[in-house]
Structures are given as structure tokens and as C-alpha cells.
Image (cartoon, rainbow, N blue to C red; front, side, top):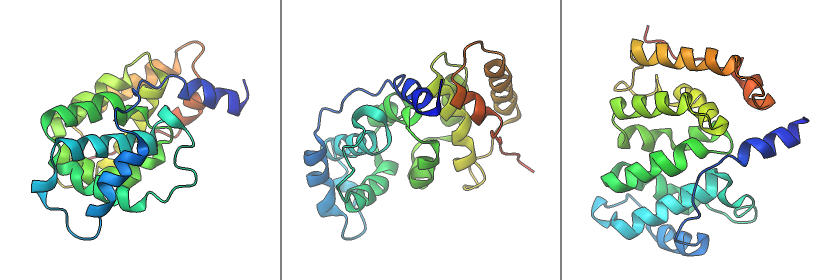
Length: 197
């Protein structure tokens, strides 16, 4: 399987549902708040829905190409600023529907600051371990890529010895999986789990 076919097969495994809010509506809700510091009182359920929709359209394969000719920088600025103020249901949706469905793991660089302010370290570890052992190759690949972008950047985020061992076991398990997507197999060689030293 060539790289294009492997990429298509990998992205086809995404589980992000199409957001209830359209991209146009999400951007219209988010952009006006990008001009200054975001007032946490303005992060209501509707704004959180818009931010989740923006994350899905921007980073997951739910609608590839939707942002090709759109300047989403103002909407994304509000989205990142809103993330630390998500309520529990929206945080759960981020973890279950969006975070492990990213089309390109390097995109975690764009949201790491909002992410570490939103998700407690123990909850993040549990989600990483769960998805790293998933049968879904996109989820597993992202769970093994994400630690590089969040650990070591915030003093509150250190990978426990148990989580590190669980993630190392996930790498070994994937390496032995027959028929593993060739891009995932290639990326396994590049996995660098952070140390706490």
C-alpha cells in the first residue's frame, strides 16, 4: 500500500461525529471574541459547542478541506482561550470525539496550552493509555504521539512510571500487530515518550 492509500485508510478510522454547528456558524460565534482577553463568563454552552466544532473542523478528518481557503486564526485564538473553561460534558466530548482523531499529530502543538489547563494529569494519562491500546490505529497513533507535545511543557504534567510502562507495552503490541497500517508502523520508530528526569 502506497503512502497516499495508507493515509486514506488511517484517516478513515476517525470517529469524530459531524458537529451540530456548521463551520460558518462556529466561526461567527468565536471570531468577535478574539480581540482581547476572553472573559470566562462568556464561555457558555453555545461558545463551547462552537469551540468543539472548530477543533473538529480544523484538526480531524470530519470535513477535510473545509478550512482550505478560510482564515481561521481569530476563531482558533478564541477556541484555545476557551478550552480551559470547558465544563465537564464538553471536556468529555473533546477527549472522546476530537483529541484522538487528529489527522496530523503535529497539530497538537497548536492546542497544548489549552489542553493542559483543561484536562487534569491523571485523566489525561488514563485517556492516553486507553487509546494507545485501541484497535483503532488512528487513536493509537495519536495517543502515542500526544505525550511529546504536552509532557515537559507544564510542571503539573509528568508521566507516571505506570503510564509510561503501559504506553511502552502499547508500542510493543502495535509492532507485533499483523497488517498494521504502514504509516503507523513507520511512526512507531519515532515515538519518544518523555522522561521525568
